[in-house]
Length: 124
Image (cartoon, rainbow, N blue to C red; front, side, top):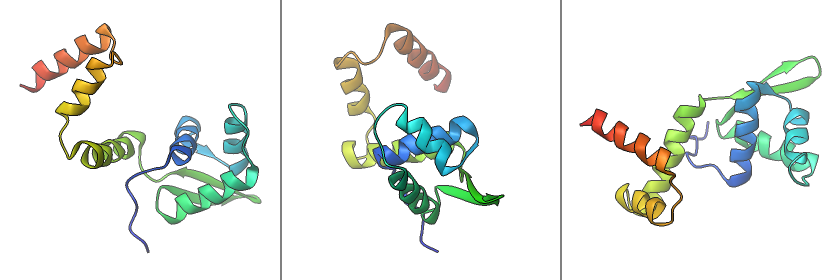
C-alpha cells in the first residue's frame, strides 16, 4: 500500500470538510454539497474521492449499492498534518513568519489575538 500523502489539494480539502461535517457521506452527498457552492461534475467528485481513498485519506464501506466514505483520521489530526506540511514547505519550518504575516495583513481579529496570547501564556 502506498504511504499516505500529508498534504491535500484545495478540492480534496473541500471534500474532507463535507465528509467531516456529515460524519460519513456518499459521492452523491459530497457532490450535492459542493454543487450548491459551485459548478462541479459528479465524475470529478467520484474520481477525487477514489484517489483520496487510495491514498489513505478516506475509508469506504458498502451500504446497499453505494459506497459510504468516512475520514480515515479525525479532522484535528489531519489539519495538524496539513498545517505542519504547509509551514515546512512555505516558511521553512518556522511559525514566526506565518504569524507575522497574518498579523501584518490584519487577518487576525482582536478577539483571535487575545485568544492566541492566552494560549501562549498557558504554554509558558
